[in-house]
Every structure is written in structure tokens, then in C-alpha cells.
Image 1 (tube, rainbow, N blue to C red):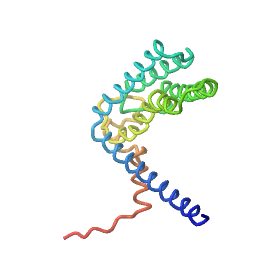
Image 2 (image 1 turned 120 degrees about the vertical axis):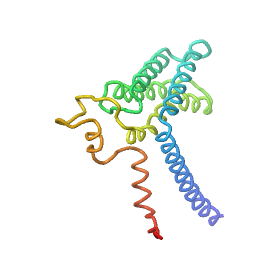
Image 3 (image 1 turned 45 degrees about the horizontal axis):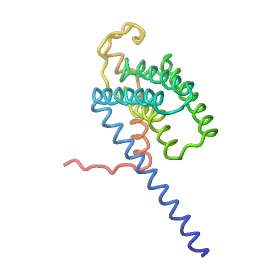
Image 4 (image 1 turned 135 degrees about the vertical axis):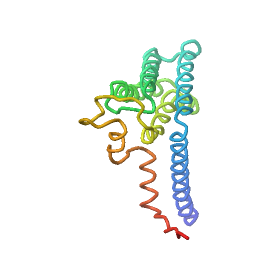
Length: 199
């Protein structure tokens, strides 16, 4: 009996490590896809925003969710649309991005407050959190690395330092930051590649 208990904890640790590695590999693959196909990623995220707004409209007619949750959900989706107007360029200090983060926190607080006071099955609560609160922010988080490899197409004086042109400014920005860069760094530091032979 005692040995089986210890074995179950060892198996649980292996399962957690396996799931974590699988999620990291999936995120890496999705981040690469978003970098390759930014216009398709933009369309997909816009479809996710539209679907989430449709879900909130259905909540008005089909469920008794509080109006505060529904209105906050619509405000959040409108801020997501404002972020998408400059996609794949996402500015972290822009008003829509800061508003989205604040609305995400407020949405979670309202949802926790409501679902702790009114009984719903766990699957329905998880469905609400997945579709209404996590789907679009997760897609935007994964698409942050798409900004790293997009060449500039217009001149914006606020981005130029001195008398540099657009291309010089782009290549002189220094080290790229993003989700894919983080994964590449972790991959190179944890599992250094073998030296390839050049024939």
C-alpha cells in the first residue's frame, strides 16, 4: 500500500513534466506559425473576437448572467479590436493594451464573485473562462512574437532616432524580444545543439 502511494507520486511528477513539455512545444509551434502567417493569424484572432462577442450576445438572451459581466466582456472585446487595428505591432504602453489588461483582471474578479455565489457545474464554469476570458488574450500572447520579423512599411517620426531611415532604424533596434525569442533562448540554453559538420 505504501509503495503504490510513492509510485503514484512519482508517476504524477512524470506526467506533469510531460504535459509541461508538450504545452511548451505546442506554444513554440504556434508561435512559429503566427510568425510565418501573420495575415492568417490576424483573421483568426478577429474571428475569435467576433465569436466571443456572439457568445456574450447569447448570454443576454439565454442565461441570467449579471449585466456587469456582460458589459465588461463587451468592453474587453472592443479593446481587443483596438489592439488588432495595429496588428502585428502591439504596443505594451498603449491605452488599448493597458485597458485590456485591466479589463481582464476585472472580468476575472467579476466571474469569481458570481460563480462562487451561484452554482454552475464545473464544465460550464470552465467553458465560460475558456471562451470568454482566455481564448483571445492567449491568442494575442502567442502572436506577440509576430512583431519581431515584420519589416516596417511606413515612416513614423516617433520611431526614428535622428536622421535614420526606416530600414536602418529597424535593423538597429537591437535584440528582438518576444515569445519565440524566449523559446529559442530556452532551447539553446537547456539543450545546446551539436556542432554541424560542414563538408
